Image (cartoon, rainbow, N blue to C red; front, side):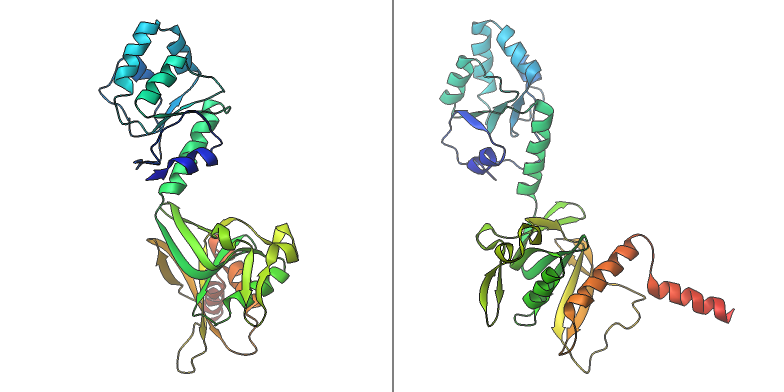
Length: 302
């Protein structure tokens, strides 16, 4: 379902003919150009998508005789169309607005050219229809790598993120991270608008990162590249020493590298997270330090 008001607001649309429908049953991130329907072809009509009218369709509408146009409207608007958007600032004929109002279908106007608006429309629908999940975590941008920091409450996620911000990295979300899958293997993390830019530090309370460190210290969203899980040090547990094989985890069926990092007094978590991010960047271009060391040892022994 797509919220009509949010759709119009995000895409900066002007309403020409209002509708009482607040939600549209849109299930695909796509649109329809109704030129063929205006010509009478309804064998295939993607009526469940937003209808985008460009210069070609609008020119054809104005070329039609008024009676033929009204007859066409009767069939066209008899379908359960979510909305009609007229591009390039071209206002449709008044009889079209009358027919849309009669069938309770919203008509919008945008000044954008058709190609640009079509791209924006698909991009918005892709994000709005994407599978979503909320995680209790912290999301930071470290050297361009989206790092999702997870762990039990009180383990030090926010403190590690604060140290990273002091070192010049960027906060996306603290405590609550909203994650959506925009493509088969792409996760985008954002922060709820109500708590955006804020961070909770135990012993101090709520702080405003934007006010303290400037606008460059925060970002509205970031692609999630890896997960670092913080946990209290367990003496009996074997932690990764060489890193020949990567641990993995899944969020919304997207496979991500996982780094389980033990926490105990004296460990500088911010530096460890920085190193993990840099190491991820090296691995993404094909370089692995453990495999390079293994290669050197084989060369020496051969």
